Length: 592
Ligand code: ADP
Ligand code: MG
Image 1 (cartoon, rainbow, N blue to C red):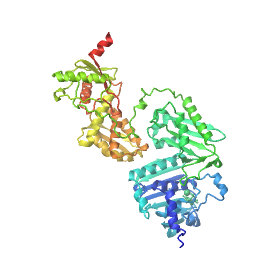
Image 2: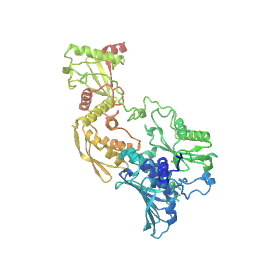
Image 3: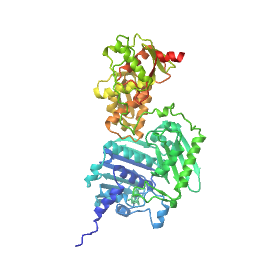
Image 4: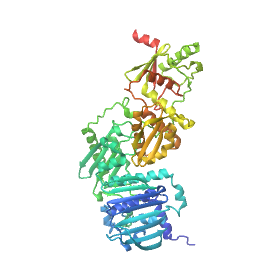
């Protein structure tokens, strides 16, 4: 019995589509690449529902003839290759003739195109490989491709799509890559009628800034290298702007974004000694290589490339980055224990809150008036434990009575950094910044659970010019910010902050919120609980009172009171010690 048959074209196309088109972002990439190949100088992208309903790409490129339009969506139809020899000198983004056929086999496609400057072109509608309609169209020179209802006929793939936010982020990531590879092209990007990007034609440095915000500008170091193997251009990011995510890592080969762990390692190794392990250097590197010395035909999405001289390229990359870091005097001997970069906002990789699981009386306040014997001995125990840095094994049981305010206690500020106060038989030195971080962090988190948050109206509302992209991130996290005590209002591209949590300095709000909304560029992808925790930590850090700030006596007392009303008061949200104590004995020992 014969059982082998040739698959019908619609099935084989759907199978092929699975390789090229995984999600709306892959459609976006393929369509924009076609526009770039068509010499467009302006590309407009419109998404509806993160591309799940509509992905539309309009360009002002060379357009297609009526006949070309008809065959453009057939499998293996391309204008970019004539002979197999051409495979070794590819300068275009596409060449496999697969994208339009793949896309049209899993969605409803409508293309309008015009090669001339007269406002008359052609159009075609295809549903799952079948032409539904053909005709003329009044369209300017260029091409407009509408892709509707992606995966409408492949429910399994449609179900596989992630949430709207995740899918939108993936599309934005693709746009970042394409827009960085082609800063000379103007891009506009709309999502559900909101303009997310408007990137004018620019040089690469300005393009980086219009995508990632002007702040990155001062951290960019140029690199440039001319060799017989490859030319190297672009920018690397100074170590002090390094991130815990890889959101700023871009390697392009002949203006095509690629992923290459080996070459990424070349960059990372050039930064050796400048970054602690959990940080990733940022880079925007452009390699130009003779197309005959690379193979980009090893993967359907063409994000992987094989290099003939990979080892040499590794060496060139590493040495020129080292050179650039050296020329711009980034000293390779930072003390990580004292450097602020180590005390960073977040731990992505290790999402579980990693406080030691100590059981400690939350009401413990060392500033008690000594009233009970228990307490005295308990404090002794407490201090002993600090000495042995064995804080986390004991269960301190203080009586509620012990909780008393510091009001009658003496406090003073030391080096504008520490709050110092005598206890019954010891001296406590509190790091003001870490204490405040802990206080704010717990206040924010309790706002989420209790929904009872104390917010203060601002006399002068703070206005932030939301970079368009941040709008998404803001919308995503609006509820969280609200539960922390921020009252906000969006007006066009302005974010107006009308209220803020109590107990913070108002002149830090603007920077903190701006920095926070900047994080959208990181590849943030976490579940909602850790997201709230992460934001709480981040904002607690940026809004906390810093070292070097002089505090009034009332403020010092409030800080101490608030700290010892916290559930956890030994460690800041980043697990660093908040205070130390010296017992009378210790002091005596030192003095003798
Ligand atoms: P490839 O890009 O690999 O050639 P595609 O399936 O993406 O394959 O496109 C098929 C052909 O359709 C292209 O080779 C090109 O000639 C034509 N085409 C597609 N999009 C456009 C566009 N935006 N402008 C002009 N021509 C286009
Ligand atoms: Mg293509």
